[in-house]
Length: 103
Image (cartoon, rainbow, N blue to C red; front, side, top):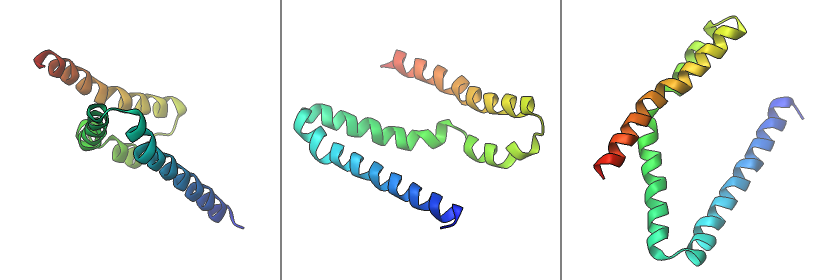
């Protein structure tokens, strides 16, 4: 078995395991142990997070994929990766504070 095939097989198994755990949580654990209001709140928060995430990260995933190979030294790469983490936080934290104040 080649390296790519072995890694693909392992990744597929892990993905199926993750779906199984998520399905168990959603179908059995959430519905049995949480009140309807809390279950609705969890579903709302997860859905909202999935919708807002692409807007708040400003395409940093694509930026890392495109420009990471342009940096040659380890320090340049580390600085670049640190900046890709800090930049969205500089936007997200003030927006979260403003949102919390307006509630």
